[in-house]
Amino acid sequence: IAQNRWNAKNPSLDNGRQDLLYYGQTKSIAGRSFCEKRKACSVIRSFCRSITGFFCCSAEGFRMKKEAFVMPQTKGQGVVFGILMSVFMAYGMELYNVAAKVGGMENKVFWLALKEAAFMCVFVFVFSTLFGNRVGRSLAFRHVTPGQDNPFFITIMISSCTVLIMCPTMSLVATVIFTGVDGQFIANWFDTIRRNFPMALLWQLFAAGPATRWCFRRIFKKQLAAQAAAQH
Image (cartoon, rainbow, N blue to C red; front, side, top):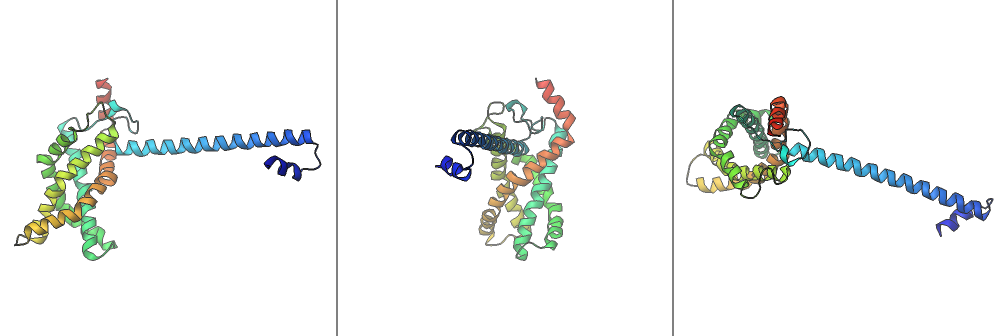
């Protein structure tokens, strides 16, 4: 049908030339379509690799190799990683809570959240260092194994299990500081967990965690590369 329509638009050509031109044009269009689809798939594949690499802490940047999964290896690296994570998490959660208090996101929320995050990040760092990170990783490693499982899923499990421990802990601290201890203390604490847990998990997975790992890789780029080379 398509060929007959094409022939009707070109009546000056004989049937043989019509067939040759039609099939040549069709093949050219199909070739261009295939190249365009292949290019689009390549772009999408590169984008997915970049996003996946951004969410994983690997010594080789965005390369998704199982053996490249690297977390802080020294106490100094651990302290820097913990400070970065504490600052990003505290500020993000304060943005969320302050915006909820004032009834929406406004310019003043950034400054008000910064003032509260200045001391809340200290609590985050202390409690995560004492037990939050250790318990979270212990829970995560019951389900995934570094060096065997995909680094992306290892990162997701560690982040999620850490939030599982730290959200109730920091909700307890926030309830004591901002609400006080009274007859409704337990109810207020559970209500704070209910409001904060979804945001804490999403913020950790999609903002604070990736930002922390990105900064960590940039700060310790040479050390991580040397450690990865030594392991091989």
